[in-house]
Amino acid sequence: MFTGIVQCIGTVISRQGTDLIHLQIQMPKILKGVKRGSSVSVNGVCLTVTKVQKRTYFFDVMMETLQVTNLISLQVKSKVNIE
Image 1: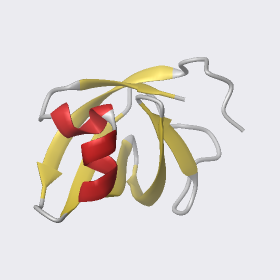
Image 2: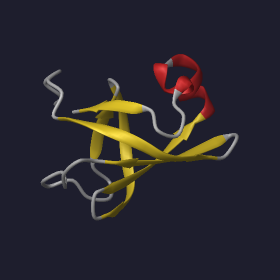
Image 3: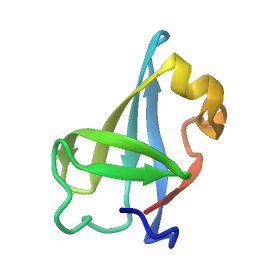
């Protein structure tokens, strides 16, 4: 369960796709215990980790999710709150 307390600020390093958006977010530190399949709150939106490479975490976001959340405005270099 998420606490509403921001753990760190990540940076979007890649956003690709049209109907399914592939996000890569780099964190300032390795997130302890977070692996493929883990849920991470990104700007208050619960996303599932699809891949982890050191401090870079990968997420797939459906267009419907983008349209009803603040994630639609994310671009490369955007800062995001991670919980």
